[in-house]
Image (cartoon, rainbow, N blue to C red; front, side, top):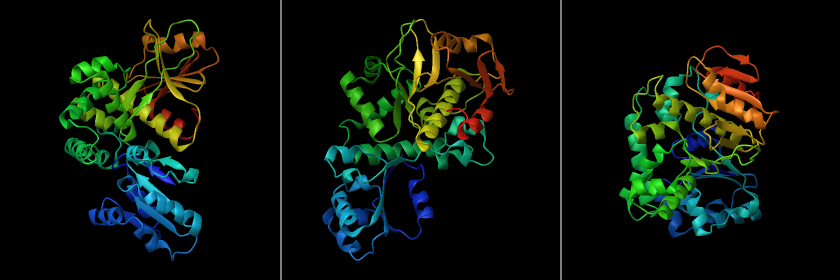
Length: 364
């Protein structure tokens, strides 16, 4: 199994706690990494006498992709089992590394999700994000600063991903402004002082290193013309907040609203991933400014996300417009309004009720 996930999502902790009897190699340890780089075949020598069914964990496998050929041999010839974890698939792809001939199932570890947190605090999650070390403290600013620095030093500079690290750091800040928004490469390129082609390559680095992802536009056009550009999100709302300088979010502000939407989308994405749901998640935006934040599958469910504590008619406009074109779609409006109820065709669901429904499989 390949277990991928961004830095500090808890891959190593999870593997060590769940599989205490496994043979474990940590490639973040410089001595271990150097030894395997000098002689990848030493992995075969170390494991050749192990019995079939022995579990071996190699953490941060992208650091020494040459080991995958040895892993393949040990799986086929010796019947050993492997869990290979990493925070980036980029180096594996770029090096043409052995992907084990389909024998390894890829899985993703996301930041913490609602069911994993006892005494869940919504405003803390919206501000700090759900990376374990960040959520657990009152003020995660220093930890987020260190997170970005380590990412730039170890994922970008050390791996030689870009020539101009300062330009990439500036790009990350500008990309945060586009968090939850439709991508316009030309505008971002202008703000960063680089070409649109370079911006596209920078976004691909974010995707490959698992700290960003795209939500595609819903493409079935019936009456209204719809926008086709994808939306971008950082993998964790706390990271987006830090890069944008949103350090003291207050309910009722636009900044809180953007972060609240991101947090809900983060939970929906993680739920889909953990439960192997095949329905695509997209968004709907028309040229006459009607919008739905999340469309599940082929218009099975449409979800609008508002941070308002008192819902008004205007908050339902996007869902109503979507219903005109997709009359069989289930409509959900998630908000801070504390009374869960139904208004016509639209389910008005308080955020904590929505979290419970989502993770109990009652949304999709």
